[in-house]
Image (tube, rainbow, N blue to C red; front, side):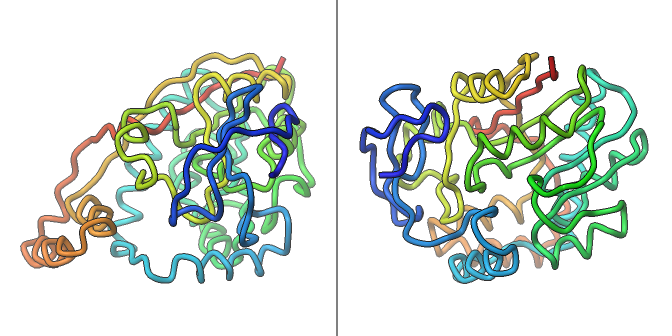
Length: 284
């Protein structure tokens, strides 16, 4: 079994097996961190070249279809605005780094108030993001710049080879007093307790699952003072909801197509899936 990345313990407790994960889910007996105890594939960024990892992730998810790209970007923009409003309560402007910026949807919104820079290992996504900001095509551990006022990362830390090393690299690039924001699935949630091995957050490239306590420990160990950790929702459309549910109930694919024909995908509602948390901390 892989040692716990948070405390180094080497005797985890088995939790469950899921065909959706890249190995068995275990829980550290010492600190409580949930993680994939063995890795059948190499899908975590930081342990191989970005191009090789990206291709393996594509192969692992080849049976999953997404929604229309324009619709995905529209929803991402709405969610980005919510996250930006939260960040600006702690630091209203300055120099902002997004780690794992994907296609640049958050950068596009954040540049209204910040000087923004992105880091993205996926070459294809990084090429899209440069339309909105300078993007370093790589991982945070090799990013050459520092002295950022804010560093934000949304749904990336669970993909990394080592969350501890990932966060330490972020903190090293933030000035004293600067703000670090991490958004990630929360395993201490009703959906996980109800769905177990079929929890929607179980996908092949997710290797680490935090709750409020283990996230606070990770941040404090990295030299941060936690300001808040709370549940956060997202905007969704019928197209997105039906697409995700169809991964569990295939007949819903027909309902997804019907919603598209009726143009219902343009409707947007705020949803709280009860399994996402956002943590805000300040560098001491």
